[in-house]
Length: 455
Image (cartoon, rainbow, N blue to C red):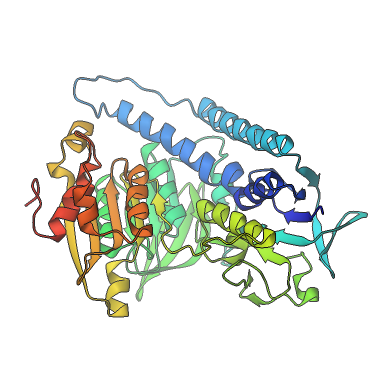
C-alpha cells in the first residue's frame, strides 16, 4: 500500500527528509516557495563560509603570513561574489538532481495547512498521510530608531554588497556576528562588535570565547560588551550607532551597520493557529519524535527552535520520516557539534564548564595549548583544546576547541561521547603525527595529569 508524504520547505531538513522517504517507497511532494537548499545554502552557511575562505586566503596572502612568501595580493570582489554564487548554484543543482533521481515531486509555491493533513498550494489541494514542516528560520529583526536607514543591513544583504565596506558596526556578538566580523576584518575593514552580554558567543564555553575575543582584538576588531543599542543616525556619508555601556553612552561611526542578533522560527502564514498547533514563542512544539500535538504533523529543523543548526535539522528530518515509517531509531540529539568559522575556528560538543557547575555535576578538566603541537606551529596558528570529563569514571562530558582545523576535528569527540567513551578511550587511540588532532589526545592525557607535550 503506497503512502503519501508532504514536506513543506526545501532546506537541509526538508530535502534530506524527502530523499530518505522516497528511498523507502513513499510518494513524496516537496513544496518550496523560494530556492532549494533553504537559508543555509542560499544566504547562510555556504555563501558565508565561501567568502570567509576567500577573505582568509586574501588576508594571508596580503600580509605574507607564511615565512618565505612575498605577496602583492589584490582583492577582486566581483570575482569573489561570482565564485560564491557559482558554488551556490552548483550545490543547488545537485540537490535538484538528487530529488529528481529519487522521484520526489517538487512543487513551487506557498503552502497552507488545512484540516485532515491537507495542504493547499495556490488552487491545488494535496492530501497526505503525514506532513513534515521544515520551514526554517528568518533573520530576527530589531526595532530601533534608524533601522530603516540605507546602509543598515542584515546578514543576507551583507553577502551581496557591491563592495566591501571600509568600516562596519555589527550588532550582535553571536555566531553570525563573529563570522561576519572575521570576514570584513580580513577584507581590511574597521570592525566594531556590540554585544549586550558580558562575553561574545554566550552559548560557548566562557574560556574559549574569551580566547577568541582576545585574538580578534589583536587583529584590530573592537568589542563593546555589556552594551545595548540605542539608535542609528546618519552623519554625512557615515552611520553613527549610539550605544549604552552601563550608564555611559558611546557613538560608533561606520559605513555600514549589520544587525546580526540571531534567527527566529519561520512559522507565520502556514495556518498553524487555525489548526490548533501548539506553539511556544513562535516555535512549533514537538515531542521526541518531532511530531506536533496533531498526529501525523511533524516539525523539523529551525522551525521548532530546538537546535538551529543545519546538521541537526538534517538528522531531525530523517528521524521524523523514520517515525512515520514505523522504524525504531534513536532520535535523541544529545551530542550535536557546534562550529564557528572565525579565525581561529571554534568547535564544541557537550556541556560547558558553566553548565556543569550550574547543574552540580562533579567533573575534571584537562587542556592542551597548541603551542606544543608541531602541525599548528607549521601552520603558524595557535589554539587550545579543553576536555571535561566525569570525575568518577572519566566519561567525556564536553569538548571545546579553538584553533586550526578544529571544525574538522570535533566529530572525533562527538563519536566518542555518543559511545559513552572516556578520556582513556581517546588516549588509547593512536593519533597520526604531525596533525593538529594530536592536541585532542594531549588534552585527554592532561585530564589525568599525564600530558607529554604540555606543561
